[in-house]
Image (cartoon, rainbow, N blue to C red; front, side):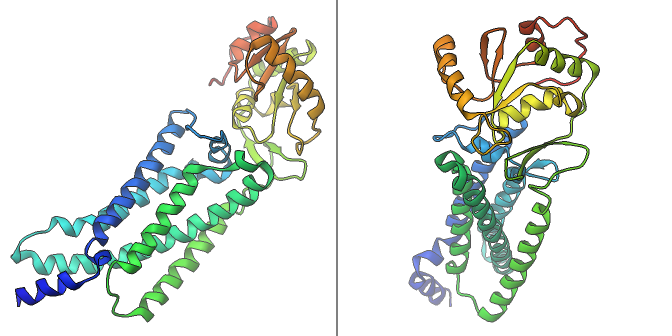
Length: 330
């Protein structure tokens, strides 16, 4: 009997013999990918990106769910898939064959349900990336980590389908359909508020009205007075509505102070865009600082300061004499 079983195993397609190690390997790669993004978000550091566009996508409202980085939920999903794939392989011995067989059956079904949900969710996010970011911004709207995650999710789904002989295809398709519909409905419900203005907040949007970010941070008297001082002294913050660092800079001031913040919109499709002025300033910035023109860039008293600045730095550079008990910090 054991010899016959061994022969059947040898005649099984290689994809079925190696399906669980392959599934585990892909899931671990996905976990590493999402772990890197999660750590970057919690440490407030930029992710390395060939095109420089990853952070634009990863700092958008689509990258946050329930106030937490979306990558964190992806990390949990990939770790779960790795456990489903590899756990039965840890059970060895003739006396544990029944336990291993039962565990394999249950985990195969969980692998199918999980990979189906991940495939649907990743497909939705890929649609968002290409329509909301790649279409208007080109290569700078590509998030390579997001594409990698979508590839891993699709690979898990394919390996799950091909990794074993499924006895009841009808039941499998029905279960997949239910999971797919539930995942899609839940995804659409979660992201329904994205891109819409939020009351009693400062909404950063394009000229077409699509909200890219929402600031809810409050302002103290020090932030309000600093913003007014910068405006009165002719300071300017050159920014773009889609720039995540510009959003972080504005968050330091808070909602009330932003009404007086002297910023210049450089994005061609931004509200009250001043692209020509930004192009003129770009050459001056490069000549004075030796750095390329990026967002944000501050102009204070005839000098340019690239990158985010603390409120304390802005106060020092502009000669601000008011209160400095600032509430927010980088």
